[in-house]
Image 1: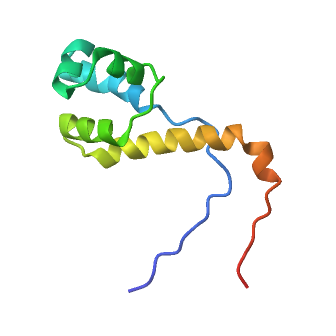
Image 2: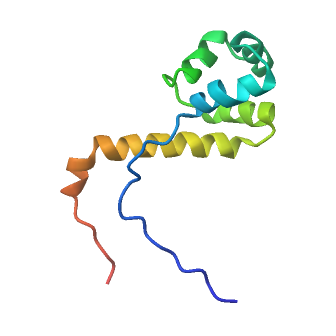
Image 3: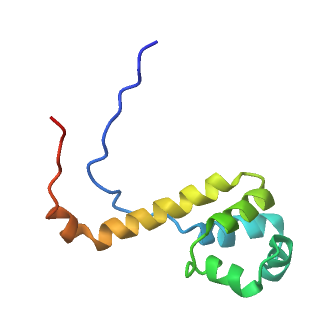
Length: 108
C-alpha cells in the first residue's frame, strides 16, 4: 500500500476559525431549543461559565470539552480541535513578526 504524501501548510488561513462558543450559541443551543440557563444546568456548570464560552471570552477547556462532547454526542475531541484551531490562528497572527525572525532548521 502506498504511503500518503504529506503537504506542509506554509501560511495560516486568512480567515479566523470560529470560536467553539459561537457554534454552541448559533447552532447547537437553538437546534436543541435550550436556553443558556437550561444548557448550563444540563452541562453541570454555572450560567456565567457557559455565557463566557458562548461570548468567546473563555476557552473550551479539556474538562468542558468532555462535558460538551457528551452533551452533543460528538465527543470531546471535536470541541478541543475547534478550540485549538482558534487559539493557534490567533497566536500565529499575534506573533507573526517575531516568528519571521526565527530560523527554520533541518536535520542533516
